[in-house]
Image 1 (cartoon, rainbow, N blue to C red):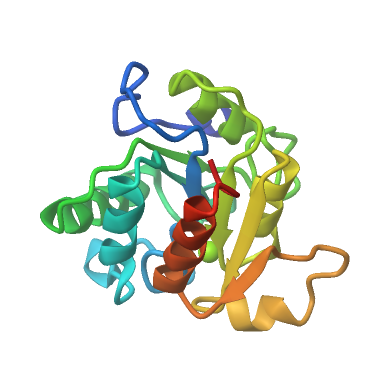
Image 2: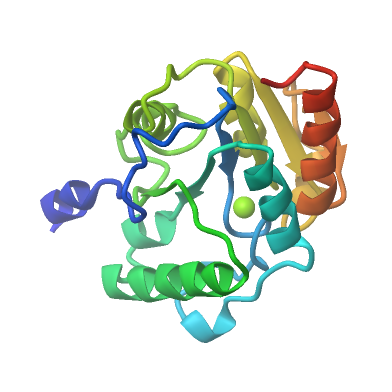
Length: 208
Ligand SMILES: [Mg+2]
């Protein structure tokens, strides 16, 4: 059982667009729950998937500016035995459908199914999935941007030598006060403001 769980590993849903010629070098790594869709602890019912207001518009603006958009999600509910692989798939499908209808296609969708105690290299803030996504998009793994509602989401971008943004949707408000030594490059109310923050810096040449 344990072995099968490990084998489930990580996944790419959207085929990697390795040859996609993007002007931008930085990938924007997006947390899913509490950042793009409403937090629902161990979300397992596709009917509970609700897009956070402004999320689609934010992704559209980032996409138009040429940033590859990659979802990176810790789904320890699988490792903890709280969500089945089938439920995870159904939620992901609903998530992708809702964004596709809004004109958004992701350049990758990766998740870690392991519990915190498992020895994996993919659970955020570890960089296993970041490196894999970057490789699949034909880019170095350095200097990317991450957005999310937890400390680990901030660390991802910063550990690539890039930027990490905390949104205060989802668990963001509670994480804000217990970040320890982690200092987000920005703390913003939601994904829409995060996109604006990135695009402002992009215009000034700070984010490539
Ligand atoms: Mg989250």
